[in-house]
Amino acid sequence: MQWVEALLRKSCDKTLTKAEVLHSLFHMIEVNENTLNHIQTHKKDFGPELEEITQTEIHDLDFHLKYYRSLVNYINSMPENKIVE
Image (cartoon, rainbow, N blue to C red; front, top):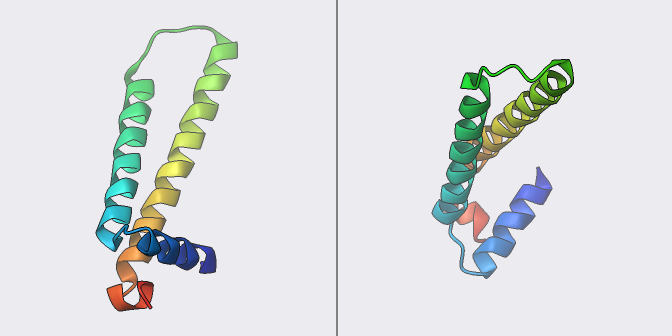
């Protein structure tokens, strides 16, 4: 995860704080959760071709949610002084 640390350092150099980075990640989680919920609750049948696309989209959104949450956990585990060194 060295690239995450480098990104955080660059973010700090450009005046983004740890809280701002986390806020951005939380926003991405919210957007992806809302999109996923919309897709999963939309029950209109468009046929097998679009069902495959829908399942791919659900898989992609699920992956992104796991990725963003793991970044949040990783960043939260870092002390603020380690980021700003």
